[in-house]
Image 1 (cartoon, helix red, strand yellow):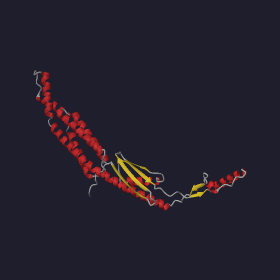
Image 2 (cartoon, helix red, strand yellow; image 1 turned 30 degrees about the vertical axis):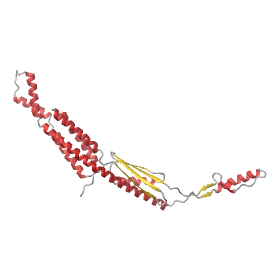
Image 3 (tube, helix red, strand yellow; image 1 turned 90 degrees about the horizontal axis):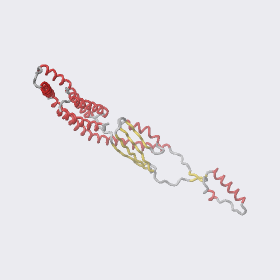
Length: 301
């Protein structure tokens, strides 16, 4: 069974179309890093019913990231609405006009076209909504959303492929520095012995000699306190696990985030135990490489 490609949490996609009534629409979906999955939709008035099912659909294919989806609808110019008189408003206007005309000697009766121009007398005829047509519109818009989400998944996987290459290079760098640290750490007991002899020689100025057995015990004690083999072994195990995760291709972001924290812990301990300038330098370079690894890992879904 082939592994699922690694996905980034960064991506962009768009899709749209035209509805039967000539209305055009466009979906634009963007995603960035996030600790969990947060899908937010911006919908025009009248499309609120789409929000819940579309969020549920997105959650089936996306695991992490802050996702923002915007639906833009552009309604084409339509024919002017059909006007119809409001009977109550027309009757009231007619009564007022006739009463006023009767009170003015020689005033002609009110004209029909003048009455129709009065505010409120005419109103747009409300069209009965066609539920089947509205449902077909929602289905078309929802289908375009699914296509856009698929495009977002493809975009995130394309970024994930690049990210996998970067992480592999960084893991190789960490592994090489770990090997250098292992080589340098092997010389620490000899360095302890030489420093201890120098310190004793300066302190005693040749008047007394410390038994070799006692000197060996002191060196062994110092070597135990500064032994970094456990840290190096754990680093090797973490590197192997990180490589396994990259090959698995599953949603490894959270696991990789935790693992890089363990990398940091071992590198810090190695530096604190170092008794040589060379090992300290390697430890600092190791910490810098791990920090770069951690920053890139934060982009993984």
